[in-house]
Image (spheres, rainbow, N blue to C red):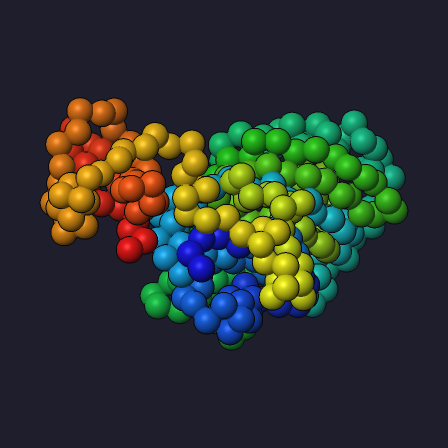
Length: 283
């Protein structure tokens, strides 16, 4: 079983929890391409077996989330898991759709974002949340992110539901705080659902409790993942040279190619400067 499975991660599970559960079921090596907070739900692509070699092609994918921003309160973790550290009255003028949309428009584009202290980013070998739990605050270097789109979905009482399309490395907790600040108040991320990672969509995912009996619903083989790439066919001699790590001459455009021999998918190779070298090998 080599490929990708898309799990709809339930709430109160860490990404590592899901990896352990799936690993026990498939009895194969399992990895993921990016964590989701325990209180978040949604798309979690898992790489299984030799599919773990796909990670280099998946780590930079952009993402789409649906988030609920709670206004008028601030927590120490910037989400609903934290303790409320500040409260502030929310004027009704803040909740006007036009005002919210203007703030959204101002946040679209490339920008620097400071990750939250309660995150898994490592500094001097320790994760930031380990410092935060001890009450230690560090100066965190901002990171470049990009917000491609922000869409207002709903306003109810003092909660704003929105959809955001963003680059890798964007912290939605921080974005929620920034939106609240730009609206003239405070806020935290109450709920978060990831609905798309790259080309992997929530509607193509499988529920965790259904995985063992219904994993085929969301399973993508390595061959299927590269289905749009061109094909190179090998005879027995070239196949053996290729499997032994010999770079073969092919006057083709640089890029990834599907490798076949006798109608059997062997894996992928990469052409660069007219030389083909092995990439992901299934045999």
